Image (cartoon, rainbow, N blue to C red; front, side):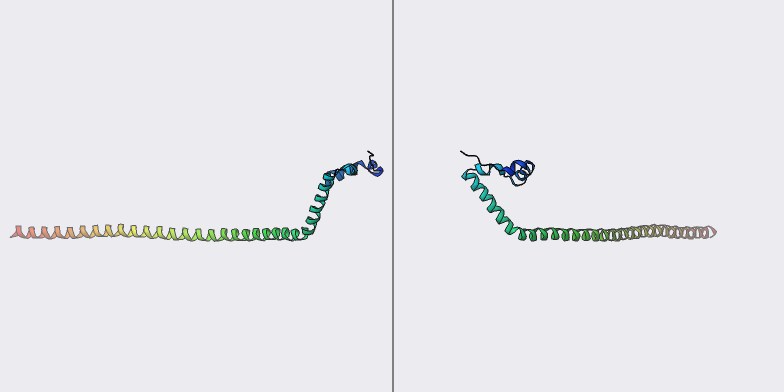
Length: 144
């Protein structure tokens, strides 16, 4: 069996190695490839041709995906920023309402205390007046 050799390939071993690394094909083995190996190479080439045909479509889809993701992230950022501002305003409104309720509750408590004190004072005044009236009545009885 005669071995077919490339003279140029033997002078460019670095390029040959790079070709093998990038494309998965050992150029020096091409003449010795079996029919099965040549068929596999043809299949890979067909797959690459198909891929090359759809690459522009894939590129559009990938660009759409990236652009859509970026717009979605910008939307989320704007939404989260607005949520922060709104949340702070809502928290302040809730705090203001709670403080107003607390203030009103304290006001009612003071009013009840004041009413209790005033009622107690009135009761004491009426009791004192009653005692004075009784004393006056008893003094009048003694005089009689």
